[in-house]
Image: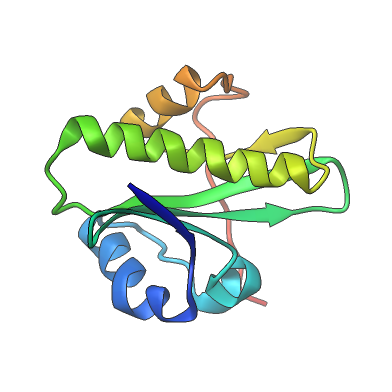
Amino acid sequence: MHIRKLEYSDYDEILTKWWKDWRWEYSPPRDFLPDDGTGGLIIYDGDIPVCAGFIYMSNSKLGWVEFVVSNIEYKNKENRKLYLSTLIDSLGNILKEAGAKYTYVSLKSESLINIYEELGYVKGSKGVFEMIKKL
C-alpha cells in the first residue's frame, strides 16, 4: 500500500473515470474540489490506484471528508475495504492536525457508510438530499 497526495493529473487520468464507472449523478468539476483537485489523498496497491478522497477545511472547527471514490475494477474486496478505511482515517488525521475537532461527510453508499461507522462516525440524519447550484 502506498498513500500520496493527489496530483493535478489524477483528476483527468483517474478520478473522472471512477466517478463515471460508479454512475455518480454529479461528478464534481475540478474547480469544485479543494486546491483545484489536489486537496486529498490517493492510495495505490503496487501500481494500481485503488481509492481517493478529498478534504475541505472551514472557518470553524469542522473539516469535511468528501468525494471518496474507488477503482471499480479493483476486485480484492478485503484490500479495498482496508484501503478505504486507511484513506478515510488518514484524511481525518490531516483535518485533526490542521485544527479540526469534527469531521463531516455526506454519503449514499451503504458499504462506505459501514466503513465510516466502523471508524467511529455516527449518523446525523437519514434521507437527506445534497443540493448544488452553480452560480
